[in-house]
Amino acid sequence: MKPSIILINPWIYDFAAYDLWSKPLGLLTLAADLRQRGVHVHLIDCMDVDHPAMVKRSTLKPPKRRQFGTGKFWRQIIKKPEALKETHRPYSRYGLLPEVFDDAVKQVQNPSAILVTSLMTYWYPGVFEVIRRARKIHPRVPIILGGVYARLCEDHATGFSGADRVVSGQGIPAIYETFRNYGISVPNETPNFAIPSYPAFDLLNKIHYVCLMTSTGCPYRCHYCASHFLFPEFVQRDPAEILAEILYWRNKWGIRDFAFYDDALLVSSCKHTAVLLERIAGLNLNIRFHTPNAIHVKEITKSIARLLHQTGFQTIRLGLETSDNHKRWHLDKKISRGDFAHAMDHLRNAGFCPNQIGVYIMVGLPEQSPDAVAETIHHADRCGGVPYLSEYSPIPHTRLWENAVATSAYDLIGEPLFHNNSLLPCWDGSQKNEIPRLKRMVSQIRDKYRGKP
Ligand code: SF4
Image (cartoon, rainbow, N blue to C red; front, top):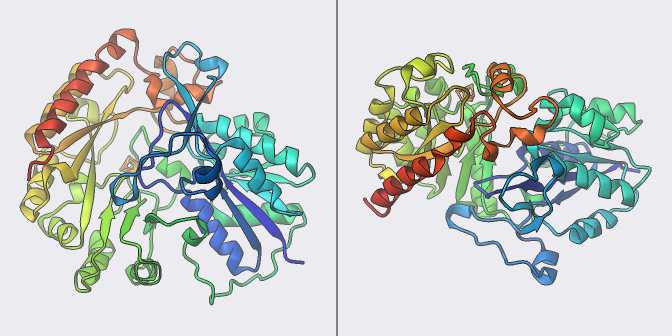
């Protein structure tokens, strides 16, 4: 009998969450690989906004959806975990009602294993809750936990998640090795290439957009980022293969919105992204691209900006982080003086409107002053970009981690809930008091650009 595997994308438990082209791409990639090898796959996406049982049964307010497939999730306010009880903001479970989740798990008879993915370290309560509930329904089935939280906080996950196995290795081979340990054999060693190998978005109830990963890793080593830990090698896919993937979703499924998940989409673009975009430009596909992960300012040349515009990029996000060059030197080497202004000039000259160009600015870094953030906001505005504050979340295995641990008043090592960027865990009370001022500055600039061609 073919093995039957349940794959679960767990709930988000947080103060805020928004679907900004957010899908469990790793889990969908694994699902596609399992299907190609003859395994029965059952996907349960706790973040599904289109689940029929939610639409029919839920007493919750339906989540508002916005343009390009983004929007809100189902949301239920819940009791805060003990560690967060001093925080005066509502805490929510985003996603399906628990009874809807339970029904979905019960529908799968005799699964061979249950795989749970994870993302932010401080979202672990959602992970633990799906494991607890799945265990109750299928008590003798091995539960395997993987994903970003499992890799960054392996000891915490091993000690407290309730999973039978925590997979801390990279990629799909680590999962197959765990299957072998449990005596689960995959029917076909070689994938069946008649079945598409693209991440299995078709298992979702509705495809609002497709996320693409054209490369893994990043050649930079910014001190606040875990990219090099999660993907030690920078590997780019063949542009022809990526184009085939885009055409598959566009022609077979009518998808118009594509979000790039790459950490370094534009690095070495002359043999990668520029090649892809040149080919797309000649096809008149009428599709839209979005870069929620930010693209490298340094890599935006006149010709790249022209290609981005020509091929339908609608949402450009740039990682400026700070305009304080002294501070920057201790954080990253991804931008040099003048790069940002040049990139903005190229984008504007190519035809992008200011409200299509969002500029991520880090706030809450250890030893960062609110005035330095204010100056970066001004700098983004002077160059014609709309600032977006991006609150710093301390991440284990990054170079800034030790400094974050030393600076923070929270127990970052013992409690991943304190990594939550909403807490601004590395700022003290007087720095946090400046947040309303910084947010006001940002919203004034956004108002100024709203609707401006
Ligand atoms: S450039 Fe971006 S992805 Fe690369 S290390 Fe820096 S923050 Fe991470």
